[in-house]
Image (cartoon, rainbow, N blue to C red; front, side, top):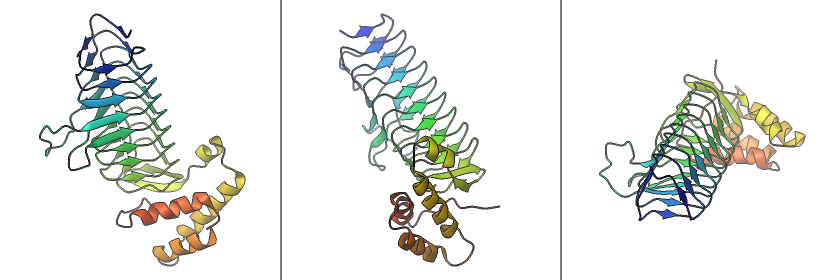
Length: 262
């Protein structure tokens, strides 16, 4: 039987696994589903059509499943799906999607969302991400696996952040960030590769050397960018990591990229 504090307000229609723990003064709405091992510590609000994955721990005053902060939203039923084993700290907010954006906000597994981080409507967030204090996503942002977002950074709507990228503290991201890239500043500029993150995650020396060489070729001052991209794809066709960058850029050629700058 679920362990529910007597001061918590839990709608009888909510789907709650018997191993869930709900602490003092939490509020759980009728269309919420809490999987096994979920813990809502205290003063947590989970509302809307929201699913929280197994063994996720949610800390005080977090708000999950609130309606999208979008002027065109008219109360349509949209969803928030949070994967397993996330740590969601104090005052974090995650909103449901919008009809025009596909109706779904999705968060992967094993993430750490520190104090006051925000995931807006229609965002897709990958696995094992870290959002430091006050890291903020606008709507429709896609964040890849293993991304680290430092404190007080903010990401413009519809931006893409590739896997293993690092976003520096206070960065204002208005352009897409390539996989394995490292950015900071206002507006954010590409400052290099996330070498520290790559080494911590066990990437081989060969993979890192290929990434560094392809970086120098891709962002060389000579020639047209498209020509350099094609050259990188040809020279480094053997490298899974480099081709991930190439495919990321080609996937949406209409999006501007964060690039090196003064």
